[in-house]
Amino acid sequence: MARRLYKMDLNNPLTFKNSQFDAVYCVAVLVHIKEAENLLHEFCRLVRNHGYIVFSQRNDLIDKYNYDNVFKKMTDEHLWRCVFSSEDMPFIPGHAYYSDRIKARYFVYQVQKEI
Image (cartoon, rainbow, N blue to C red; front, side):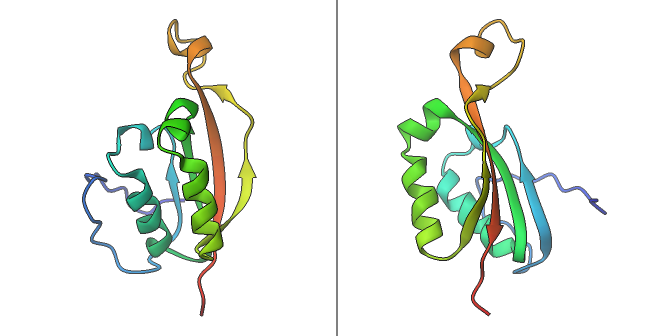
């Protein structure tokens, strides 16, 4: 459970200490981030070893920005490992435009830091 909530511009570097958090939850946010790859690296820095990063991304943006390769690269660099990756799901269920046209995937990665 969160003890405190922070409102920050995720397009800028975050001012938290390394390994300060047990987890990061970032659903329906990366779509608004200019450099999501940088933010995912920042999340790995902020989350303690064996902590979790939970996030979603729209499929059209996963394809456009080649995020599958980004996820694999970060795995190959031993920054994290995939614990869960969903099937394609509606981006905004029940929405007149997005429900059928735009899909999203949900992910859970566990941070893997060398100690």
